[in-house]
Each structure stands twice: as structure tokens, then as C-alpha cells.
Amino acid sequence: MDRGTMNPEPHRRDTLDVLLFIGSLLIFFLCLLGAGVFILIAGFAGVAGNGAQASAGWGMAATLSLLGALALPASYHSFRALEGRPARAPRPGVAIPIAWIVAFVLLLWVGGRIESDAPLTAALRAGLHFLTAAAPVAAAASLALRGGPELSWKRVWGHVLSGIWISPLLALILEALTALPLLLLLFAQIWTGLNGRGVLETLTPGQGVTQELLQAGAEEIARQPWILALGLGYVTLFIAIIEEATKSISIWPLLRRRPSPQAAFVGGALAGAGYGWFEALFLAQPGADWSAVMLARAGASMMHMVTAGITCMGVARAAQARRAGPAVRAFLSAIALHALWNAAALGFGLGVWVDQTPEFLAGRPWGKTVEFTSAAVLLGLTLAALIALARLPKAAPPEAGEVPTLEGEEQS
Image (cartoon, rainbow, N blue to C red):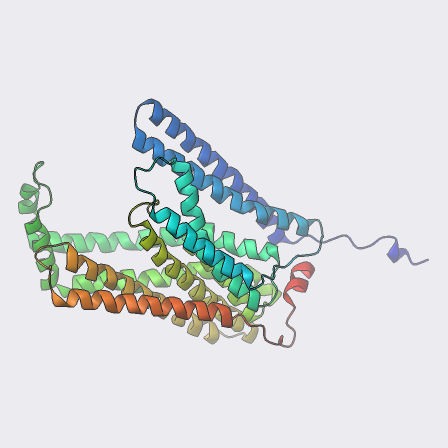
């Protein structure tokens, strides 16, 4: 008798499945705990008659509850994997991204008509904001999943949660640590040039920051252009380096499974989607200028997706080739695209500011030029990102020794 058929080999549980299951449940319960704390804050603020604080508390409670709910699909699919059940893969049809785009337009239309004092609860406004931030990244992610190799639902949600929780936290810590010395240096230089004691005398309780003080600060920066160059270099380039490095974290634990470059691109794009989604959640709630802000954030989220996908694709190619060249080239390409986006966004904001706000700069002819040129660059990058998300994940024949994605997940 063949005893092997009577005693089948038990299912071997993967460490990553265990970590995803525990981590997603931890995220869920911590978000619920945080939501409960904000509900208490909102309740006490309402009793005390502080309507603004109560509204903010209800809004944060709703946002944390929705973020916690996002962890449940990862818990479910990782639990299926731990039980040894076969992996499932999404394969969205063409109607899915179209539906998300239509939903995004409708949500923008609704949110743009909500005044800041509209009789809607803060929780409903937070929910509208949450869905509007989600719609463009869901549409772009559907495009990438539709054309790329099959990734299981477990891996999809693992990448997204990595982009929402791990990468932004690491990026925030690194950016804060590196920004502090730079801010102190810039403040010291400007303060010295403006005569700090005189500034303190100017900032009387009834006067505050005057137009003359703003003009003096601008003139001081103009006399020391290296200050402006250093600040712009940090915002455009150094932040891009930090964020692209942290977004690539989602692919590193999977390199032992030898993912194809196309699968790595899709995984990185999903992590970038989570990153862009997380950033968009902390913008202003629905109101007067909300639609324009969320429309701009949609483009930024797609750029996060493409640059993260490029970096992860390069890392996968480097792992296959056993040399760092592909990863370095991809990382530099992602940094260049990210830095160009940051520079264009700063240029657009500067053009609007020069054209509208300070009297001592209003009417300068270059304000409009910078504004429209930057807007054109941002629009072009957004369209290029959409095309890249649809075309780059196209599956190619597997290389020698490469493990198909779903089989690799089940065999790990």
C-alpha cells in the first residue's frame, strides 16, 4: 500500500502570509481604537460648544474607520493562504476603470457644490473625500492589473497596504530628520539678513506680519539665491529620492520568489497608489476649491504609481541579472520624473502666488508664463502616466527559471 497517499504533506505556511495577516488585523484594530478616541473628543467638544473641534473629531473618526476597513481584504486573503486554499487573481475588464473614472467625475461634481458651512455631517464629508481620493487610483490600478501578469488578491492588498502605512511613515520620518537642519540654516541666514531684533519689534500683537516684512524677506532671498536654490533642491529632488526609496520597499520581500519585471511594476504601482491615496486624505475637505485640489491630486497619485512601478521593475531586473545596474537606472529615472513633477507643481503655485497675492509682485509678466507652463507640464506628465500604467505591465514571456506569479505565491 502507498502510505504516501494516506499521509499527504501538510501545507507549509509562508512567513509573509503570517505577517500580512497579523499586520492587517493590527491596522484594523488600531484604526478602530483611534476612531473611538476621536469620537470621544468630538463628543466632549460638542458638549462644550466647540463646533469646529467636534467637526474635526467626527471627520478623523470616519477617515480612520475607512482606513481600518481597507485592511480587512488583506486579512481575508492572507487567511485563505494560511489555510492552503488556492490564490485568486483579479482580472478587471475595460468597464472597471471606466466606471471608476465616471465615479470620480461625479464625486468631484458633488464635492464642489458643498459649501464649507453646508448642513452635512463631518463624517459624510470625510467619506466623500475618502472615495474621491480613491477613485482615480482605483481606475489607474485597474488599468495596470488588466494588462499585466496575474497577481493574487493577497498580493494586491499587501502592496496597497504597504503604500498606505509603511512607505509614508518612513518617508515622513526621513523628511523630518533631514528638513530640520536645513530649516534652521535657512532661518538663521534670513534672520541675520533681516536684522532679527527689528523683526521682533515689528511683530507687535496688533500688527503681525506686514506686507513690508514679506517684501523684505523676498528681497533678502533674492540677494542670497543659494537659499532659494537649496530650498527648491530639497523640495524637488531630495524629497523625490526619499519617497522613491521608501515606495520600493513593497517589492523587496518578494524578490526570493523571482517576480517578473512586469509583475514587479504592477506591484510597485499598487504601492504607489496606496501612497498617493494616503497623501490625498489629508487635504482640505469638500468646499470651494476642493474639486481643483482633488483633480491635481489625481495626477500626483498617478505619478506616484508610475515612478514606484519603474523603481520596482528595475529592482526585479537587477535581482534576476544579479547586478545593480538595472535598479540604479530605474531609480534615477523615477527620481527624475518625480523631481520634474515637484518642480512643475512648485512653479504653478509660484505663478499663481505672484499673479494674485503680494502687491509688490502683482502684475509681473512672468507670473502667468510660469503658471501656464507648469500646468502644461503637469498635464503632460499625467497623460504620460496613464499611458505608462496601461502599457508597461503588458505580460512578456517568462525568462528561464522564472516562477509564474500565482504558482510562486502558492509554492512559497
